[in-house]
Structure formats: C-alpha cells, structure tokens
Length: 267
Image (cartoon, rainbow, N blue to C red; front, side, top):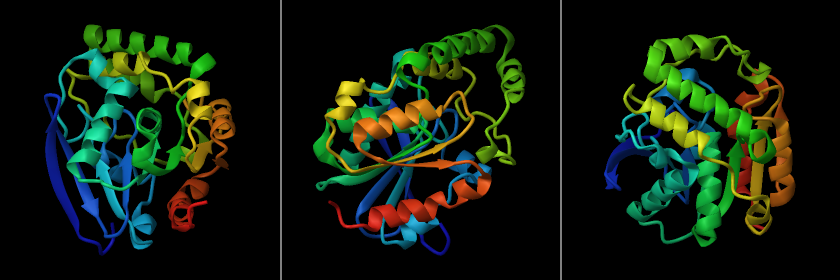
C-alpha cells in the first residue's frame, strides 16, 4: 500500500477466525478476493493495484475469505457458497463498526460474495465495484461440473494432480505473465471450497435488477470462467458502467479507474 501504514486484525464468526488488514483513512471501502487466493497471494500475483484507492482518501479493508489465506475454515461444503461468504462479509462490517453504507469491491468469488451481501442488505452499501464477474446463470453448470470433478481429483489423486490440470488451461491476455501462486486453502479444505463454489451462482437476474446501487463492472476478455456474457448481463441489470480489459496494461489501470469512480459524488 505504498507509504500508508497497514494494520492487521482478526475476528471470529461462525467457527472461523477471519483475518483482515486496514490501510489509509477516510470512508470505508472493503475488498473481497477471488477463489483460492487471499491478500498475500494476490499481492504476489501483482494483478490489482490498490494504492490509488488508498491514496484517494479511502480506508481500504482487504480480508482473507473463510478457509483462504490466514483465515481458518473447516471442510464443510456449505461454508464456501456465495451466500455463506456474503454472511462473513456482513459480519466483517459489523466487526468494523460500519454504521454508514460502505463501498464494496469483489473479484470473481468476491464478486459473488459482494452481490449476495448487497441483495441481502442493500442499505449497508454505497457503491459496488465488480471485478471479473464469474460465469453465472446459463453458463454456470459447466463450471460447477468442472469444480465437482476437481474436488474428486483432489480427494483421489492429491492437490498436485489438480494443479497440473489447472496449469494447462489457457490464460486470458489480460492475465498474461501473472505468476502462478498455489491455492491458499489447505488440502483438507480445498475439496469443500471447490464444491461450495459449484453450489454457487450469482443472485437471480430479477434480484440484480432490483438493486438500486451505483456499480462499476470491470471485466476481461477471452476467459470462459469469467465470460463477457456474464459481465455484460450483470452490467445491464445493474445499470452499471462496464469496462473490458484486453491486455495486462488495461488491468494495471484498474486501480486508478476504481479510485476515480469512488471519488465521484454519488448520483
């Protein structure tokens, strides 16, 4: 986070110790990471730059999802569905004493987390930023089937066998050159994370259409797990701005784009 002091904390919710960090001062903005990652893993990947958000005058809170990074978790499939993870996010806001609506950002799994939390408790949120929305609705079942098969592979052949298969998948151009980082969930938890994600979907289109929150959608091209069809539909339902990255340079500019978006007066 550059020159800004980062403080760390944990809180306990539903049998897990959830770890988070706070950087900067100002209105609260919270970020939920993607599946299998975590704060430190995303930092090693160098994918997203949060320094502009902090520099723009935000108190940025990033946290490790249940079972990821430095947060604990149990091998319970239902703990890793989007609605369950949304409950963890809302509990984090309670822990932080967030009396006013907050800006919320989420990537992939974190996008699903943020959307379910916003549908459940829209008054807790001011604006949403959705990064690389995951495949949803009509395209979700193929992904879910793949995750169930991956969970079986991990249990039968071990984590390395799953990673070898995963490494052969082509990357979208916008993620070219991003280093491989091992999944952060422990081996005993990983199959439950995979099955929990397989049980998940974004909120129903009607629920999104009824969500009256300003929203920015940041997607990238040529990624079947995060297709532009989902991002485009979500943006239309949410009346959101949509920007599509087609190169690594485009993604590097997302931090500045998010900071500028959050700095605008609310409509």
